[in-house]
Structures are given as structure tokens and as C-alpha cells.
Image (cartoon, rainbow, N blue to C red; front, side, top):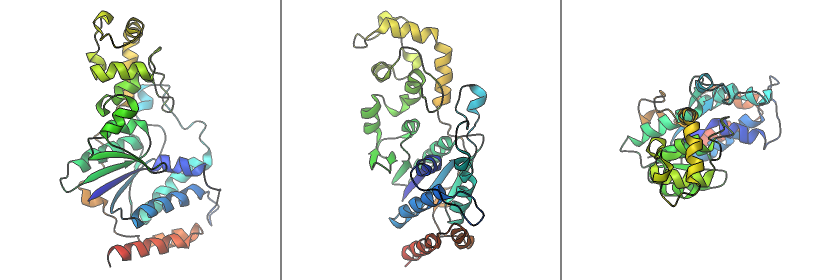
Length: 293
């Protein structure tokens, strides 16, 4: 079997800015919700059988307690934030497993699910469906891969290394020195993508980088400047790596069998009608009937 793990937060954000606004019978904004439901349903219609969707039920997480500058919900439109619980409710009604994150982040749930899924010998491939560079650290060979569905890009371990210049296990260190504007931490001054790649492709982890810049490999340019900056911001770099390291201890599922899609629940029809999209229920029931014909 293949396992498809979907970044529901990314999908909701992406569709919010791509589709027209729409309201349900209660006057709630649901334009992005309907678009995500159609997107997930299209995966099922194309043969996806084992699916899990992770969402950020709230934007803040345990990382906000570690670093004051970490991303928050400030500036996110209220009509976008309000659609998260609706998306979670409707996906569950469609029969899809959903992990709404509060203490952890959606990325942590995806990382945990990918690691768990890869442990099952029945699983052929795990597809982490998001373009988020953080998830690159979860890629393993050709077994756990990253899929950017919008652009049709499939990224295995070799492709991660080709894109970032480092292997998946070095992605947290890479982001620590480079910074991540999306997550709100700045990285180490003077370190850019080229410096991060050339250094960490050779030393893998921050602790393995020689403290004496004279000992750095001659292929790494500006070694003295980079070394001095890293050492003077060492504690920040270690903290940023913690922020960039995805957790693998999120309770997501007991067995991969829990992710099997078994068709929509009875309340899905009513929810679809309330959204003005009865076709979604028809598509879901047809997909289930076709899969069990």
C-alpha cells in the first residue's frame, strides 16, 4: 500500500488565496474548505487508499514558548482561521483521518506519521504531500518522499540533496544557520544557502564543524567569517535547530490500517448540502462504490 499524508494547513492557506469566497447556510466562510475537500477527494478518486491530514488547529505551538519570535496567528485573516475547525469537521465526515494540532504543529504530525508508516513493511511508499522545506528532513531514500502536488514535483532523498545541497538529516542544521522567515527565526548572521550547504554537506551537524576555522576544509569559502559568526551565535543556532527539528512522538495512529479510507459518514451529505456542494457527497459515495465494486 501507499500512504498519503497531507499538510492541511498548507492546503487551506493555498486555496484561501486561490478560490472565490463562499458561505454556507450558516453564513460561515467555506470557500477554501470546499476546495480542499475537492482536492483530497480527487486523490481518492485517483486511487489513494490510506490518507491522513494534519492541521494547525491553532497556529501557536510549544515552539512559541521556546522562542518569542516564532510565528503566530497575527496577521492571518479571521476568515481563514475560522475555516480550520470546519475543514477538520468536514474531512472527518468524509471519512478521512484528521490530526488537529494544538501543542504540536501539523508538520510534527506529518513527520510522526511518516516515521510510523515507514516502519510497516506492507507500506510501499509514504508520500508527504507538502512543498514545505521543513519536511525534507523526513525523506528517506525513495521510501519516504515529498510530493508537491500543485507543481507535480516528487522529491526523494537524492532530490532533497540536489535542491538544498545537504542530506535530509542535515536540514534542521541547515535551517538553523540559514533561518526560516516563514517560521520567524533569523538564522546566523552572514550565513547564506551556499555557505550552509558547503559546510553541512561536509560536516553534517553543527557540533561536527571544527571550532578552529583553520581546520575547515579549504573548499569552504570565508571560513573565518562564518566560524566567528557561528561561534558568537552558537546558543541561538542550537535553539533554532530545535525549532526546525520536527517531532516524531506525536500520537497519530496505532496501525497504518487506521488510515484506510472507508467512505463518507452519513453526516457528510448534510454538511455538503449546507456548503452548497451536494456533488461532493455524490463523488465520495461513487468513489467508495467504485473501490469496492
